[in-house]
Length: 181
Image (cartoon, rainbow, N blue to C red; front, side):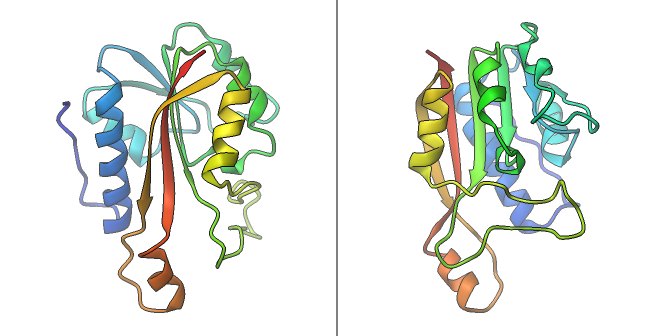
């Protein structure tokens, strides 16, 4: 298992999620394979690089709904998509056309007690989809991926209230490891 880097500058929930993601990634991915991480450079992709992975990110200017040519690059053996696919209007073409042989992706799960996340001020900070695990599985399978492993995680928020209490008992995140069929 790879050594997992950490960073004290992020919230405890973000650090917990990053750690869980890196642990899952290290179960399936070696450090010598080139990774294309969807979305601009972010705290998690920086931690992946610090942990020894070879990670490139897509440009901040790339609209992955309209321009998914970047995933057709055969240079990358692995495609990662950590909490980005829910922001796309149509993630299917991107997943279908990817030339990567492996995929590791995570999503926030649809919660029956909370509306979909929608930031009125930032058009890129909205969830067009909030998947249930079976919906996400169907999307991946239809796009040509075979799910080899998956996990669901509950939130670790320490906030007080009805929703935070429900989040302690309801899975909030779903991560999958897939290989091309």
